[in-house]
Image (cartoon, rainbow, N blue to C red; front, side, top):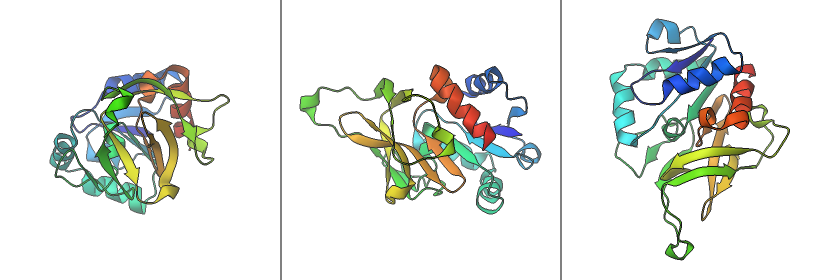
Length: 203
């Protein structure tokens, strides 16, 4: 069973609907510890500001359970957008700590003004897969929908699964063992997002 963690942040219904569209039957949204404890896979969504999300996650009283599922039971976890940023140690956007599953920090785009690019980075972009991984196995070059002003900077480049170009090359997917992150929104990325979520459901 895939559990989409409801901690008060994120576009949960659209993620659930995308899973249903690809035929995933055992998937639900929950903030119930008894339900999350039975999960085979976890998905951590997120939109908005880092500190606000970190505070909501703390208030949910689910962090110890998520730690146990991810670090001890090795259950696959996928963080989406802000959910990916929460997998890092910290963010320039706030003062709260992240979950620290990925050896990275979240930083703000600081682009050369001459490029005349507007932040947030918003719209469709192709990604560059840096290493083979079952999560991103696709038949064609993949593009996804992005909306973000901050991005993840990996201290360990081996944890950078894919990159994207927006004034600079930045990490848009991460992976360490059973922990995965996607800066883009697979639930808004049509067939490419559907394939990624299908791959995740099969991990």
